[in-house]
Length: 144
Image (cartoon, rainbow, N blue to C red; front, side, top):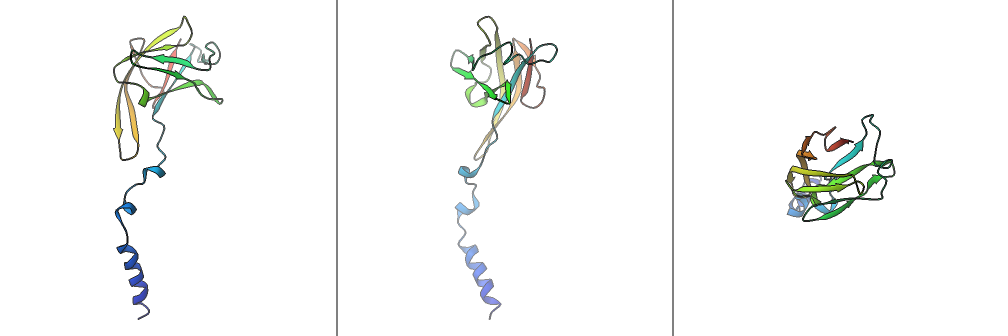
């Protein structure tokens, strides 16, 4: 008799499992940052953002939108993040580093959505109308 009681208790808990116990609660999921990082370097590999181009934010704009890119952090002042959620596929964007240094970027990317998060992959990035390859996944170095 005593062996049957623990078995019945386990069966009772399993019978109480609802759909909310089997589905992912997106409020508890921490999604990866869906962005690319860019940086500018001279031909010697020295960073230009924060040295030659010094601003608290850099203007990235298209015919449809304007956003301001800030350095990622005090430990990465030479890198800027461009979030996929704020850009459109195959649209020319202008990145203003200074009043006289202006570049054109065009993004082609694929976004995969699961139940909680989106994850994008850059298919092609045009930098001043030339194809630019990533240094590592989602990290681009532009040489000036």
